Image (cartoon, rainbow, N blue to C red; front, top):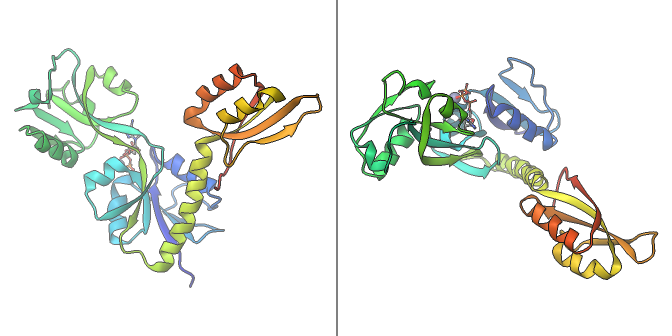
Length: 286
Ligand code: ATP
Ligand code: ZN
């Protein structure tokens, strides 16, 4: 039988949709009907397991799955023997300490002798130890944000993305312990055949990630401005320049990085670019 790579992704939760989308964008097709435990890809040697995110690090360590998509937060908390292969750029959040908003706060020393409620006792414990704070940690599995209100704890350590949950529970964020995003983890002892499939998958993931971070840009410019415009637009190798029907005008095509995007557009306009079109890129292979 031909070797297959087994990937574990979250069954239902905040990482599920983006994990499925990433595999789809990699051109991998499978049937993910409701309540399925696993699915086989039709067009790539991949088997997909749908699991609770908390179990993924352990399954990958044990080799039940070869690789997995899981939050950095969960991976660190579970402290399993797995390899970080790639950061995936979604599921971004931070693990933070929060206290009731009307309480004064000077520094982390304020937490000496206090009680924390958290679902992340390992990460919080290490953080407190590193900072030489002696505090009590109460592990709870959900609705951590209500703990101060019901007198269970003085402070909480929980995941935050927008901060709206903290706000509605009358809490304020005081320290960020960890910035997290979804990562690809792998078993540390994958066989050669499996590593080969993983390489193929990573090649596709990187093409998808690159494409997301870049945009295709088209614009028109008078020929006497082309030099300045080409300096602003480096392109993959160099920009493409095509003559327009109108005399002394050209069309310039190039690729720009998302994070420099607005800055570049402003400079292009100042330098005489007109009719700027920006188009998403589906895959990008350099
Ligand atoms: P499961 O049923 O699989 O155990 P869960 O309830 O533990 O799910 P989710 O709330 O779906 O987990 O979150 C999964 C992951 O999404 C988190 O571990 C974290 O990495 C990421 N995440 C991103 N933003 C947030 C957020 N605002 N709150 C919680 N998790 C977030
Ligand atoms: Zn979970």
